[in-house]
Structures are given as C-alpha cells and as structure tokens.
Length: 411
Ligand code: SAH
Ligand code: SF4
Ligand code: F3S
Image 1 (spheres, rainbow, N blue to C red):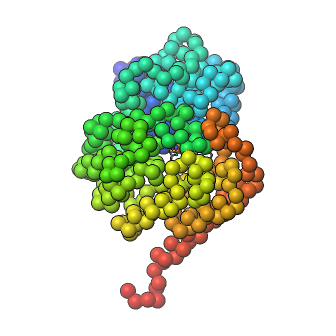
Image 2 (cartoon, protein in one colour):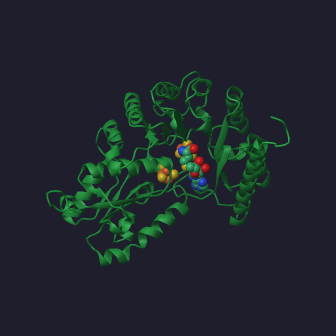
Image 3 (cartoon, helix red, strand yellow):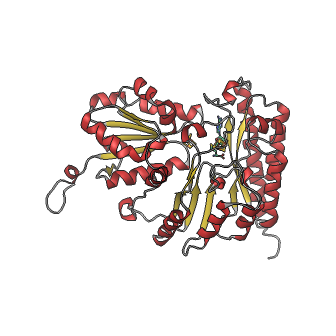
C-alpha cells in the first residue's frame, strides 16, 4: 500500500503479524493486549496468516487435546519456514509456559517461546529474535514490579486501530489461581493469584463504555477471588469482588456485566446479594460444578460438597427467580464409579443448566491427580459425556416447549 506522499507503507512498518489463539477467554484477552503492544511498537496486523511475516501462537495446556492441536499446527510450519526462513515463529501462553525450552529443542523452526509471566516482554523478545537471529526462551518470572507487569498486559487497540467499535469487551481483573484443584494445570502455568487495582479496572470499563461498549465480561482464572490477596475463601460478609461489581454497575452507558469463571467456594451471602441487587449483573452465572459426587469432589480438592453447590444455586434463584446457570463438568476422573456419575447426573438435572461444557478427564503431568491411575476407560468417559450432553439437550427442549405460545388459548 502507498501513502499519499508516495512512500510504501510496508517499508515503514516493522512487519505484519498474525496471532492464532487457543484456549480460554483470558488467552483471547492476552492476544488482544499483545496485538495492541505490537501495534504501538510499529508492527501491523496481517489480514491473513499467509500474508504475515510474524506468526504468533497463544497456546493452552488445560487438556492434552488442546496441546496436541497447537503442536500439530505449529509442527506443520516446518515447510513454510524452509521456504521463507525470514518468517518469525513465536509461542506464548500456557503450553509455552509448561514446556518451555523443550519446545525450542523439539521444533527447530520455532524462534521464540514466552512464558505467561513475561508477556509484557514480547515486543522486546521479538525484536531481539529478528535483529540477532537468535532463538530465545523468556519463560522465567520477570523481576519487574508485578503490578506494573500486570497492567502492561492490559493494553487494548483503539477503536480506530481495531477498525471497529465493539459492543462487548473482556476486562481482565485478576490472573492466576491458588486453588490447586487436583486435576488442573492452570495454577502451574498461570502462577499465583494477582488482582488488578480497582481504580484501573473502573477507569478501563468507563473508557470502554465511553467508546460504545455496552457489555463487559470480567475475566480471571478465579474472578470471585478478586482482591482477597490469595486467600482460599472469603470471610463471611467479605467480598471485594461484590464491591467491584457494584462500582462497575454505576458506570453510565454500561448495560450489562458478566464474569467468568467464579469458584463456588467464593459465593458467600455478600456476593449473592450483590448479584441479586445489581440489575446490570447478568442473570446467567457460570458456576463450575465438576462433579456431583462428594467423594470425587474431595479427590478433586474442590472444597465444597454437592449440597453446598446446590444451596448456592438455590439462594441465587430464590433472590432472582429467572436466574439461569451454565457449568463445567469433568467425567471419568480417576475412581469415578457409576454411582458417582449418577450423583453428578442427579444434580445436573436438578439445576437444569442452560449450557454446560462436559470434559473427559485428561491427566496433566505435575498435578496431584496425575499420580493416580487414569482408571476410567475412554469408552466409559465417552459414554458419560454423551449422557450428560443428551440430558442437557432434553432440558433445553423442555424449556423451549414451555415458551411455545399456544395458538388455541385466548390471549
Ligand atoms: N478457572 C476455571 C477453570 C478453567 S479450566 C474454574 O475454576 O472454573 C476450564 C475447565 O476445564 C474446568 O472447569 C474443568 O472443567 C476443565 N478441566 C480442567 N482441567 C482438566 C483436566 N485435566 N481434564 C479435563 N478437564 C479439565
Ligand atoms: Fe483450575 Fe481449580 Fe483454579 Fe479453576 S479453581 S483454574 S479448576 S485450579
Ligand atoms: Fe488453557 Fe491456560 Fe486458559 S491452560 S484454559 S489457556 S488459563
């Protein structure tokens, strides 16, 4: 493209980048922040992967399948790198953090690997890799001030640079997790909980609203632990997260506030009341269940019983009768008997979730559960997965039928 003064635009730019994102909404938000940082540093987003000279992959580690998918894609770039050696290939996100240098050792066509705590260094690492033709692993926690590093990861493209005025946006409020559910890799790859300064969050949300955003989704590996400085549960009556919701709700122009994902152990009465009495907070809560069997919940180190989970849903529905729920369930955790699965099914069908993500247990190296035998055969995991999905479908059919207008009845 030529500018009005006849100069070639591409010659002014450092290069065209393309980011492919795997994993959760936090990764999507991180990719957005990386795009903003690279744009500020003089790079530009390519219209497509094939036009890019910098290929970035934001990776996920949560299940083996998530890793295999990214590794397959990145592994397949060997030929491209042979044909166009000037192309730079960089990996970041949770799998990059987990496998670190192993990725550089196994994939000689990859130029750099950046850990989750070093995301803010990405433009610098990219420049070094380009100028020095060096292969770089920046995976050790940074020495930088952690509050500043946290903010450095929250840049955003201006509506002009993004070329759009979105109605909905993600706002990261905390990162990391201290809960160590026995199956989960997240605390190992995302590190300990760190909450952002509330004033900065409010300012960011107000700016988004002023730019036309009407709905924000607050993000965190455990959003409801916001502001608790790493404690594993709040005291009765204490919920900095509830206070944040109430403050955000006062922002003019903002119509709806969502959040993902909260851990049930953080739902005390203070939070339940704040959700119920703040109409801008969306009447759909994603509340990960994982299992309905107390034995399995204990082995998962979830910190609640099925009855306690149900009590939270009941309290929320009591205060907001139209409240709906979505959830995450893992089937086939080590030692999950048929009777444990039936307990999950019972609570699943009692709550009648609007939506549910059902996962087959996948052992993750280094977690506590990975030391247990992965005892449930794949076919049984498949079958349990299928049964819950069918139950979900039936509940949706029932709900939809209840909404059908009966033409024969007078209105
Ligand atoms: N922070 C979120 C979960 C993030 S991971 C929370 O606590 O709700 C998203 C979901 O992936 C989890 O809720 C869980 O259902 C699933 N998951 C995590 N580790 C898994 C594993 N090893 N095997 C299968 N599913 C897993
Ligand atoms: Fe993983 Fe549990 Fe933390 Fe969620 S709360 S990220 S499932 S360790
Ligand atoms: Fe995956 Fe990391 Fe998110 S492991 S689910 S990308 S926090």
